[in-house]
Length: 239
Image (cartoon, rainbow, N blue to C red; front, side):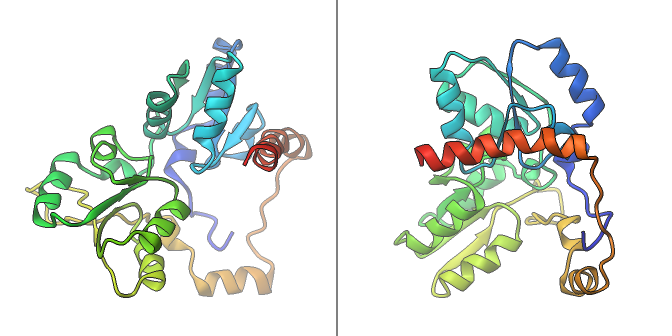
């Protein structure tokens, strides 16, 4: 890793030992975990998903009659549950960035920019998702920004993605969705401090000096690979 302290709130909010106890209490359920989890958590799962494939895999599991234990992001889990009506028991984690987006302030911003299309990542609260024109993964949102005919977009995901959208569509306007109420000084603070710790210089040093190597136990690797391969095989077969 470029910086060994560059963590993730979803990972931190789902400790492997606590998750193991939770799974043991609900051993009849199929365990589905998001990509933003530790190898130890993945090693306990049946499936791993990304935000772009989570909906399709959950629908597949529902059609097979399986009950799901979902972790860690509760907003993404609730969004998928609402879309599929699957039987899901959801771990109460959240993304530090997406959890801060506010529904009321987004409604006010939409009034200020009435022609703007709202692009939302499904890790966001339900009151934000309900106002979206497009709901999707980072890749899906970038694609929408490029392909939709609209000239203005309110973007609800990490601020770093706006840079990529501007590269693909330099003639369009991208507005950061609000992350705080009227009483706060910051209206668009959607920036992950941990992702910001990884930059070109420490990436260069990491690769050239071969530092900050991550070691994972072999038995954990072998177990963690299984849910990842299951997702990839599903994608190859059904997508």
